[in-house]
Image (tube, rainbow over all chains, first blue to last red; front, side, top):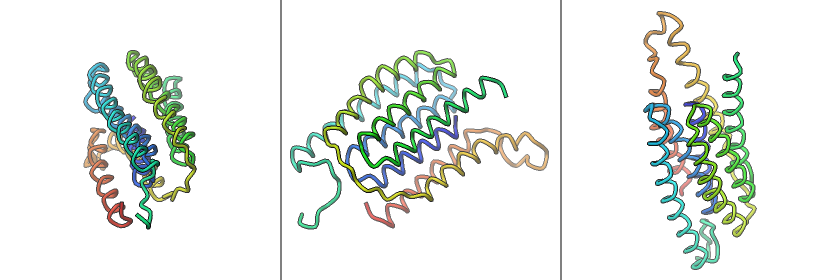
Length: 88
Length: 144
């Protein structure tokens, strides 16, 4: 399980580093959150409920913040791309 | 190899495969769909370890709400972009996972490897700052 969580974490970080728009950023964060909570369940030997409550709160907060950022970007810049154009 | 071990290996392999396909997909829509499949297999792993409530909640909340919102957002802002694949990182992930899975087995093998701690989560704690430092180097080298 530790191997899987590490691989998921590295894939999430990889997507985060190479992402050029907000949607991929959101997907990469979901991967990293699931990897960390998978490892928490294993390393801390916590019961499922503790991990679940933390997981639901943090994931919902992260989603709300990123959806807000996506809506703001689409209204202001008409795109979700993070690339800076030369003309800007 | 018992059926339980086989099931665990299959679930973990599927999760890794879907995550890699999500990274490799150039289309955000398919990337989000593969993310949902990864979440499903992770929910299966929770169920495998006896946390059945986690399976239900991940299926309902993560796939039902977060996954659907991500899929809808990715379809609304659908863009197909070229991605600079970094195969060195994928090799690094495979090496780290291999080491973290095999070292605890070596630690119980004999006296000459007593220096290797058998406490498995220590490898996660060692790997996390390493990964963070590598990401910092990557960002510093290529820029944000």
